[in-house]
Length: 567
Image (cartoon, rainbow, N blue to C red; front, side, top):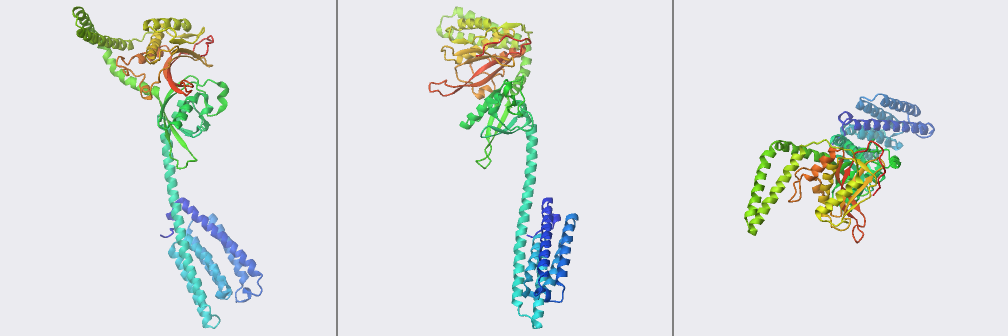
């Protein structure tokens, strides 16, 4: 491998060649100045040993060196021409000094290493060997002449110098070639990394999922626009800790849980509106989210940095609400065609089957037959309930959202539900709602809460206050009704489809209850969602248990409401 001329290399390598040439020019100036100072005061040595004007040669060499510096600085073209011109001048001046000094005994032969090493670094190997061979022939010829005239016997020393020059040129050229090759490889890798970074930035900027890069201590290092929108972040500088933003505490808690148990790499979190104005200045990257709660599916992944001292994790965020809406639209598109004829095509045959089953039940006495008839009747009732739910989807009734006092409404609904299900009076606990009022159609709110209570009673333990209705208000006048029980939380797999129509985990369910409840809330400018929560000391050993709750977020009242009691 030989060192190529600069025009065959990258721009960075060509700049390196020009910098090396300037370094060589600077060294030439120093050498010329040292020779001039030293030899100008040498009145008994080299100065008087030959016919040449030694000091004048050094002055001329210094002037040439300064000229080479200026030329390389202002005329950055014809690199090889400049290099070979400078090397020719170096060899000529050093040869004159060598002759004036008396040949090899003067010790000036060592000066040849400077131009020869520079040629080995900056020129191809052939040119470097040519210059070395020229110096070798000159030195051997000069030594042979002195032997011929009987003025020297140092031919062997000249030969050793020449052999050393060849060895030095070969070694320096090999090292320089390797160095240039490594630099070219580094430049190529740098270009590839730059291209990859540009592609990564483009993908992160346009991908629909949110991407957040976070450190082991919860420090956020980067985030794409989708993540900024989901989390309510703003600005190019996103360096802050998750724990510093109160609204991001659920995400910080989920990240801490994943670090404790990496097997749980998926979680669901609810990012609620930012409510504490006193903490808004914690970070300039936080823009107060005022009117939107985001329910996110978070997937965690650890980046392989190769350095344990620098740990990075990547959080992939998905807006579950958007995914749910897409799934619902696909299902409702096909269901809409069914709704138009479902009353005639399904309800009439169901009525006939139910009537025939009732008549058979009056004439049959066998326990086996009665049990079979009961199975038929139960399934008829289930299908009929599904039909009613489907028909209800198409009824967009204008809600009567007059102010509704929650305290009396919840108390009446509690008593009715306990009588219907035969529950003890202390199973359902209601926090004091005070004089709080909301704008929600009473019939619609009744359907929503009854649906949530039916789900809660299925999984609650039945202990006192195992089911709780809690009204919460924040400083931004948002009011929420929490419906929670002491049963296990919904798994992430079920949560991903919780509000999809026709999705159910119960053999007796239709899969439309929660979907209808959310639709009724939307019809009243409210929102129904499910969020995870963590309760300390829920177990006898004081450990923390994860659970969940349904949250109804009411529309913000237009007038100043009375202050509800915080749970």
